[in-house]
Length: 232
Image 1: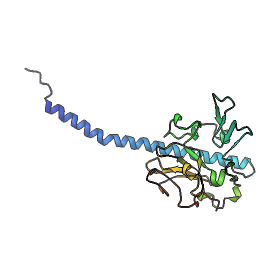
Image 2: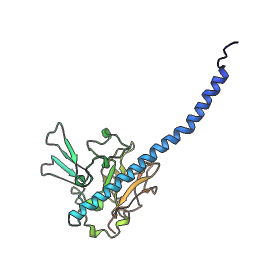
Image 3: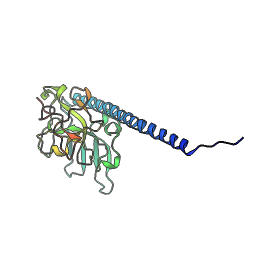
Image 4: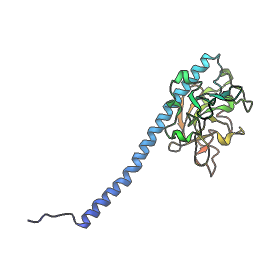
């Protein structure tokens, strides 16, 4: 009796079946991976929202500042990091104002970005409402008191964020009327949704993208005006 091998037709059929299965399964795997990142982001910003609430309770009902500098500008302390440029060749990064409550930099790091994409900042991917809540000392915007926030459940605190055509992460969320809105947009990066935590502590993923542009289709605002950011 002869040993019978595969014919060319049979081999081609097997290859075709494998190709069809791959075409079906690869998008499913990619979607599952993206769903996991989305879930991680919701968890991260929920914990950061809790850290913000604890900070407010410990600081006479005053919101956490977005950032500030030492008089010589060599040390920057922000809500999510502290970076010391005293040794100009090797800046030292540590946890920021949320650090005593989160005790982890990973909470402030979105899994969608690599560390080398963060333009010198140790933790990025999420942005804190600097226009109305955390303030901006260089733009003369004050830090808010918790009592000034009339609608905590409708005021964005921290969100997935980024800037640029090839999106880079950033730390400060800007309202549409803010002159720096262009570099402080919300990034709808998880299957066209963005993770947001509000001043009352509840977090959600939203697909309501406002003010997109052709050059930055996945970046925009949470509202057409400042209503999702302001103290009203």
